[in-house]
Length: 357
Image 1 (cartoon, rainbow, N blue to C red):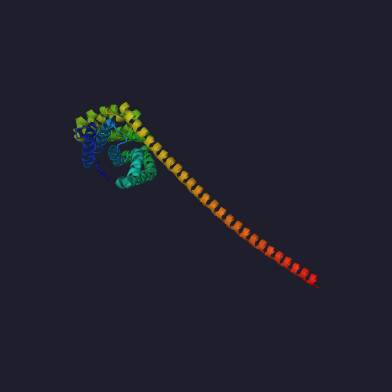
Image 2: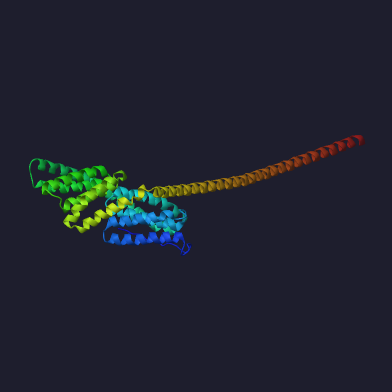
């Protein structure tokens, strides 16, 4: 898993300002989330990351570069956590939001944010490859599960254990491919056959029920149902003394109770981000249009200068030709005049000779 660090310039905020407190709170949550990630407690890390995002809602200026840099880092963490949870579809959604923010930062300061754009692209590639791999495995797993169904229905008792694991694996692959409802169906089948085999609720059924609830939570409308399912399985976890599973159940219930995505304030936050993104795009379009107009004006000026130069050159050439023609005409006229004078002199000379004779 890749975790990024974008150094923030917090000097612009007063030490005791509200914005500084918001950023410090988000950074604190992020530090905790990183520790949880190293311990592979991804659901707890997800909760802390969401808490960090929640703290950013009250920031005063969504156009602030340091705010957007921290938002990019948190969205990257969120995508990585969903990737670790094999929720590749949600990981892609997180990256979509990330690129909307990061692309604008790239235009403003490519030297600072360029390396993080490369890391985000690498994560996007990993997500797409993993999703494709999951789809390839899904086809094979479906065939294998079908064969095990036939064996179980034929009375092969030993095949039930393999069928349970195959159904569970199929559900996991469907979930990673974004087919959440189909995944829940196969989880329910796996739990049914597992309970039928053991005749009671064991650690395995509790674990699969938790996994099924996690899938339900990815569909917002099904979160209340997921909570009911978790509350129903919690007493069994307590009875079996499975402290780790008990903590997982309580953590998921807490996440549902703090359903950030359903909060009006969170929706307003996303709306403001969207408006900020649209504003940024509009500003970029305006800059491009301004540059286009400036280029057009410059081109028009150049064209006018060139045209004036061409006209002046043409006029000069015309003037030169006219001058040459005039000179040529003057020379012809002078020669003609000279010939006429010579002819006149010769004529007078002839007349003079005749008179003398």
